[in-house]
Image (cartoon, rainbow, N blue to C red):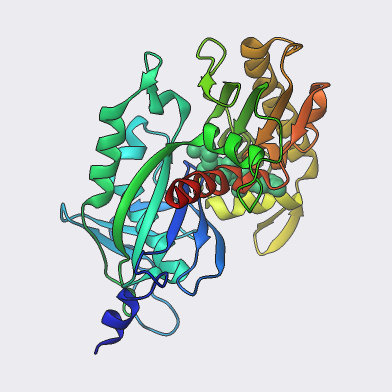
Length: 347
Ligand SMILES: Nc1ncnc2c1ncn2[C@@H]1O[C@H](COP(=O)(O)OP(=O)(O)OP(=O)(O)O)[C@@H](O)[C@H]1O
Ligand SMILES: [Mg+2]
């Protein structure tokens, strides 16, 4: 029996494939669920893809890093070290780039050649249309993911996707807030709660009433997020260090924003002042958008902040008396998607 065949038979004892949730955002692909060995896996990968094959051979000489070809015949390179395509195009969630990222994240997490059930997400604005679930868009996302993506790097295998489901990102974060890891209720679901998901490209607000329905009047998506911080920092760094139009990889921006230091001309440079300024400005913009929808939020039981942007704007929950920060904001959607579909499996 080949190694692949053995791997394909893994999963739970009754033959059900492991369940993995993938919060496939514009900035990062977050993966949370049952690993191939039964242990919980939690991984994050930058959503950094470039069209074409880019010469990033690994030192071992075993070919390009993260090179994929899709069923349509196009090649894509996934890597932090290249300047990525701008993911801020509208149909990212239905694109071959999204398919490559999902497959790449799964193969990095050890699912190469292995059967796996997945659940991915759509932002509020795309999951609903005229106050109803947008079944057509959801189906298009499933269809896109079920098409082929083939790894072209040595030793890398594609995962075998079995069941493919799609949930709503911010509502998933609500489920994460409401249920503990044993899927028992840990927070009062009878009240009205707002979830604010500050991501890379977007800030999603979802107002959940009584654990059952969405208040569409107050829910919605604004185009502001951490990628705006990167852009602001990049503009200021370019001007301070006279960089003209030099391309800087996302990994460098990410590090600068997290540490206040940027490696340029072979040495670390302090950019704390730039980062603090830009973070303050973008946080204000995000708060204005949230306030436009929720006002002072006096009638809400809680406003729960999630997403990588909430981790970056670490005091943002204090802007509201009833604000609360998720325990693990970056992974709230992925964990919630996992909990919701794990509960559905249990029946
Ligand atoms: N503690 C942190 N400090 C600084 N930046 C952070 C921190 N945690 C996460 N980030 C950054 O926040 C950004 C947004 O992360 P997140 O995973 O929420 O975005 P996304 O879900 O991909 O975007 P979107 O929801 O718009 O599709 C990322 O660029 C990530 O690197
Ligand atoms: Mg997100």
